[in-house]
Length: 575
Image 1: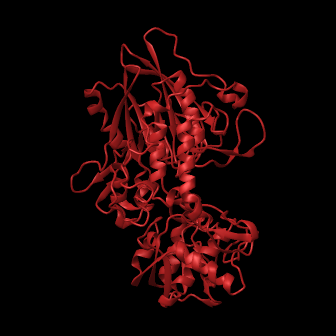
Image 2: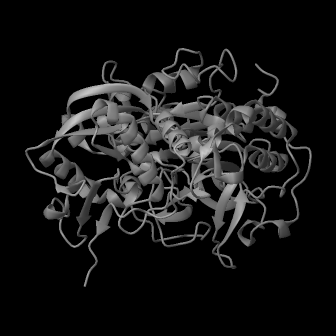
């Protein structure tokens, strides 16, 4: 145990809560024990989609309780630690739990160390359990199990155990009721965890969206079956009841969307995949803590409370369970959202010190300048046609790296681009800024695809409405097409607009295509890439391709990057 790996009891507060005026109106009433005889109040705090954001970051605050939307800085493990320290002053038995994607797609300060600092931070915060998310599988099952259990045997040998050696693993428990090992026929990780607070046993059951198979490299999850979420959760209740559990809480990495504000009480407009899952749960389950969609909400679905607390540690959900101890049942459940505004609560020395250590260890490597950009910032935001300026830049870098292997076209999935590529003084971009924009460090694969297969993979962009959540593929310079939103699935691309360097793409002609290994394995539900022939594993990482491209462009006196898109993808405008 290092000097910052403190037990949960070390995080108990020594100072009282700040004045209500420092908080949102929805956060002013403090939790108090239920006054009814025979009723015990239990406090849960939940987070989801932390994504390694151990430092505070920008957050658009748009509350249901007044004021225009505004951009603030929120989150950071120091602020989360301060809030939890204060709340534990009032209730030392408070339980902190999560709903997946604690790691993965992380800022460089975490990803450069294989997210080990974020795991350690969760332990310092006193996290008890979390469902796995799809991003916990980014580096495959072997790496997930290493991050849970510890050790240095990792597919990311260049990052693992570089921050702390040996790496001791997570003290909190990942849960995955619906991720089944096809050999043992048992869950890869425990399906549930029983915690006790104020004499009451609570069964936390974890699950991840069954479509996680589309969002993780196929090679990394080989031999795993992601089964129906609701069925897997319901199967756990008889076993939990045998152990004296009468209060059940679902932690699921699946989500939805709503037109209601993130802190609106009793939201009733939730839509999306989580709704179907919730409706099929056992009636005894009355609280579902969700994630994945990066949307905050406090909604009711068939009388159950369904919560989500945004992403990146910007918001924590505080949930009150009122339990009838005589019948061992949940009588009532309520929740509110707390925005993690730095300075709101008295500092937590342990988390402050740990954050400083991570920053100090990371600073020199992340601050190293790489090259100059042509503009101060290359935005990630997609235009109405589906193209982004950052997508243009990264695909061009990918194509340049694949040229020695004959590549003519590059595709990059929008989900691999995580942040605007910002620069510093003199428009010079650093290692840390590059890793923030492109954090996965996937390797590049070159393959042959016929023109007809390229047409098919482009049509796959809209299958099942997936374009809404994942966006369109980004494409390299010289490749272009137009799509019509009014056409049905399978016919959105206008055939006579599909061009490579001004020449129409021919169905029978073979083209050399370069993509990251995630797409090459059919990731993001693009099975057309699995049909690629004459594959060449380049062993070039996407981040290295981008670094080399920017460096060479600067050397040639033509720094890369633009703030506007290049018109490679065109959306047919309605008359």
